[in-house]
Image (cartoon, rainbow, N blue to C red; front, side):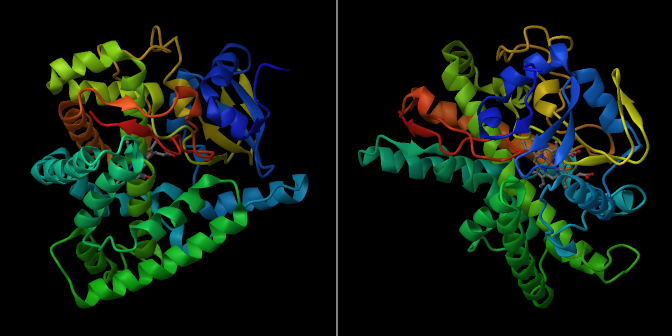
Length: 407
Ligand code: HEM
């Protein structure tokens, strides 16, 4: 009974790994509740997680999930936001064939080759942001929030340039995006989603009259062909790409940097051989990735996970963070080791919803960690380690702030 969390609350989210270790041992798949009282099944073992992510009986269609949540709300007094279709009709909330149709529209923009072509530009943005940090340090600042100054603006600039959208409202967008994904306050999520939908519609209107060579112009052209994009799907696609840009890579850079600061020998290896950055990124993804729990799925019929049968009509959360720390798959899994074999980690998910943006996220992470360690080889934490806190988010894992002294 005391082997697993019963609520995915702040205490759990500050250090989920201790709870996951006990769960994998004693109670690998069990029912828990979110902070709003929604009952969900949590899957924690690597083998089960991987199987669940490819199981066609675990579905994602948001209209059906809403029905399941409404039932749970009625049965158990749970709360859930209704953020409206405008921002929900995207591929991550759909099953085939709609999922397949939508994914095809953007997958070409994120192939390894197309993404590699962005390298010089990503390097340039990275250099500019680190120049700004160096200038602040030169003026005597000894405490700079690495997330605010670097990890957050980098992926935002990149995704905004790729889509062809201005980043003038990026602070608003950050707040909205955080409120939609946090899972803490259903009303705040609804308001933020409405504000985002309004903003995105304006953005799309502006782009229609000022087309460019960018991804958004391409998507707008697709939307004129109703076989390809229907109704809210254009707005939702842009929402998904922008939210992915705001909520994930920032935490790859933040959590990865913290792992290096926590392991001086690992940091030293990267400093002496900067071309190790890509390996460091893979291990950072495995060790403390940006996505704790994959997005909600539901059972369209009873599904056996490991030794547990989950009945039909239940919500399922697969813990990528726990799977990646499973000793049965990654020996000495609780240790950060850039030289380990990281292949098969689940930080980008698995199966048909495997992250479309993975090549871009890897490129950004590699360039960011490499330049950071070259530029500030003696960077230190500017606050005591135990003062660091993780932002409340049921699905995501990222620090509130990462104050450093660049040197
Ligand atoms: C899907 C992780 C960056 C776009 C996913 C999923 C994960 C993930 C775990 C699957 C979720 C599930 O199955 O429930 C990450 C991580 C990132 C990252 C760890 C950074 C380190 C990005 C970026 C973009 C992006 C930069 C876009 C530019 C997407 C899209 C999907 C997705 C569109 C939905 C794919 C589908 O449903 O077929 N990501 N992501 N991601 N990601 Fe990422």
